[in-house]
Length: 96
Image (cartoon, rainbow, N blue to C red; front, side, top):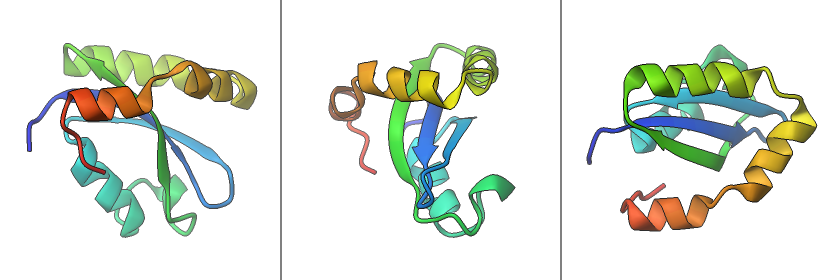
């Protein structure tokens, strides 16, 4: 498992979107789904990864997280539609 810096959007079972950052996306998804992730996602599982970006640095990932959190739900949905989640997962050998 390789450690990188990721910004991600999850869809909770109730349709709410959660944005976060991590340096290990596989582990973080497991944490969210086991109830050990963010308080927001507890009780809203299972979560589904809908969007993923890879950043050069931790700081870049955190800044991108903050920017995405300021977007409206509709803007986040548009970002998800424009993203290339499957391509990113495949090219970076990420198994969720």
